[in-house]
Length: 334
Image 1 (cartoon, rainbow, N blue to C red):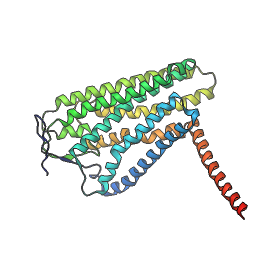
Image 2 (image 1 turned 60 degrees about the horizontal axis):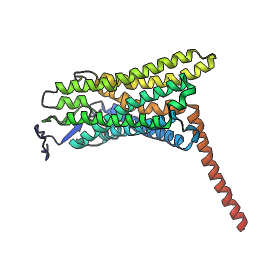
Image 3 (image 1 turned 90 degrees about the vertical axis):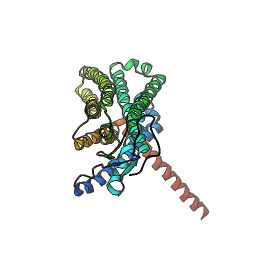
Image 4 (image 1 turned 180 degrees about the vertical axis):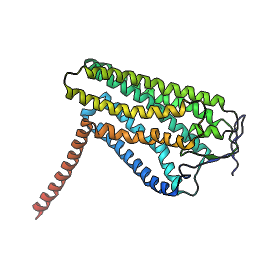
């Protein structure tokens, strides 16, 4: 093991790299199945969310508050899954499964910045739907451009500040060995297990932070969707109720999955003694939720699908025009 060149002001750490086990403790057949599966999920998630960003950006009809937040969410999900999944894929094929001390610190900071930001952003999106459905006449006056920008900016700034505090707290602890992280990324619970000091205060701080950024925003989501359901029940036609409820139900399932698994991981005071279960839970909010985003917000969204079809038709039309011009120019030359 190498000796670190850097020192902390009070506590010293003799570890300058960690080993990410990922799912390498699983049966080799399971690993051979997981690698292509995770690779497909990563590619699909990136392409799906990138498609949403492109369609929303290019289609002027989608320049509304709802799709402004959706574009933010899609960009966030792309970054979110990129922070963890490529490194996980690397652990399947690389002999050296190490991550440097500073890279581990950076990964944790980015992961929690994006995770906390998503908590606030999902709450903002639920509030946006609440205003749109329950107060449609006041929607564009309440959710104007300035308000949307402030809400999105506040979500990102809050995520950065909260993550910075937690990451600094975790990586100011001394790490004397072993350096094996039984996880697929530098998460807080497995990192606290490796610290060679009392981490009770850190566990409490993590739980308090988890309560602030998970149950509280989720309470706002529950309130918003409760009001939305009440409004849906007042819709006179069953077809209209079914359409609105179908869309909101799929959104709510994704949001509940993200908040529920995240809360179970970070609101607990004590770190878990079942690392394999922690890995599976982490997969739900770090991999499955970003995967569901393009499925829920594009394949089940008529406006996004309409924008995508329009974009494809425009591209095909341009190519056909160029082809016909080339053919005509050749005919004229002859």
